[in-house]
Amino acid sequence: MSGTSDESRSLKKFLRHKPAVISFVVIIVYFVIAAAVILGDLVSVEDCERRYGPKSTPGFAVSQLFEKRLQDVSWYAGQIEQKLTLRAKLKRRLESRGEQPTNEKIEEELRGLRIGNLRPADISAEELQIRLDALWDTVAELDEFDDLNHPGSDAATIEKLTSTAEGQMRALYADQSPSQARHRTLHLLFGTDVAGRSVFLRSIYSIRVAVLVGFVTGIISVSIGSLLGLAAGYFGGWVDGIVTWLYSTFASIPNIVMLMVLAYMFRGGEIDAWLNKFTGDRFRWMIGGTLDETLIPVFVAFSATFWIGPCRVIRGETLKLRESEYVQAAQVMGYSRVRILLRHILPNISHLMLINFSLLFIGAIKSEVILSFLGIGVQSGASWGLMIDAARDEVLNDFFWQIGAATTLMFGLVLAFNILSDALQDILDPKHV
Image 1 (cartoon, rainbow, N blue to C red):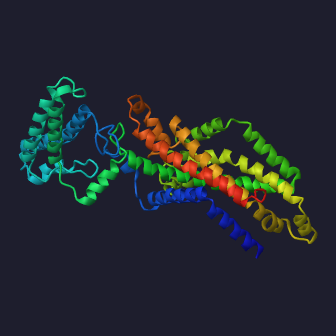
Image 2: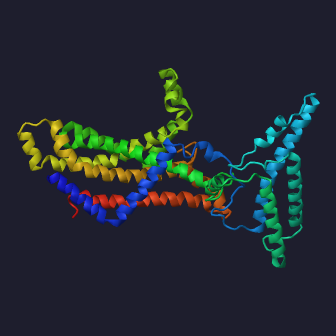
Image 3: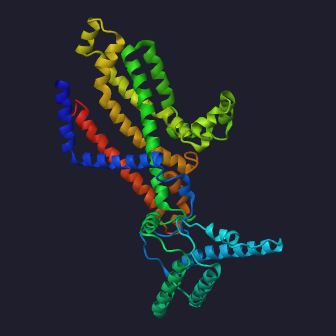
């Protein structure tokens, strides 16, 4: 009854802590998105690498200068022109071989064009060429103006011609259904990066990476640290000496240096080659590729260093609990050491494990961003660190959408966990009233 009452009081305190409740909801949203990416294939690596439009377009359909609008129109028109050129070359090649250039073979070049979910208009290539020529005529008129970004008295004329060019550009592509239009709006919600990739999709996929890195690292590190801390604090003697020497040695090495060394160890394929030779090439099959293509090196590098903090905390608390009256009474009654650890000590340090998990979750996310920014963290796909690294040149050109999206999403998750960690410490720790 007492345990149930304590749990009920803790739950009521948590529900009264409005910032903690809001933070918990935010964290759940992040976890749901990550689960949808992992299990439901909401966003794939291919989606992150696919081109969805011109380079460095702003998000939320923010209005651009005339020159950039004209560049974007020219880019979309250029994609159609390239396919029409390839189509013409294919037709000539078939004719030179004496083959009949059937429409199916020729139109295949146009069907291969894909810009997100945009497709060329479902009209003949000849009609498409006519529309394209009309667009280039409008672009040529705009090229006659000296400075599109400072049009002066010509602003109205330039706006009219630019709008006309944009309408002609849209006529080159097939009309989209309401569902397709919504998807494209989402794809371009945060704009595109310097390679024309969707910043929104890369940001969503990065949530998967952040949650996996934080969750797996937190679980492994807290498990290792708690196990060693419990053993050192309760058994003492040579066990305590070995554990203390271990975490003192690891703690003497700068954290970032240790992470970099461990991350580099998994590069180059040497460990992969040895493991595949040892397992008969089953290792590659089990992890779905090489180590560089997975998050395993990141998990190992972080877990090898992050266990030190939980180990110290759990060891210190176990040393105090070992001298408590109820533990000594259990020893006098003849209970085994395992029973005392599991039934009397572990429940009283579980709040510390939970708090350390939330702190390590935050630390792992921030460390992943730093290592990925340095080029030795996540190697494929997308992550907030890779996005921030890729945005360095963009920032110099006053384009902040990619770095803004990555840092905002990271800030939201880290802040939510910080607030929740403080709240849990106040609610669960018996020393806090």
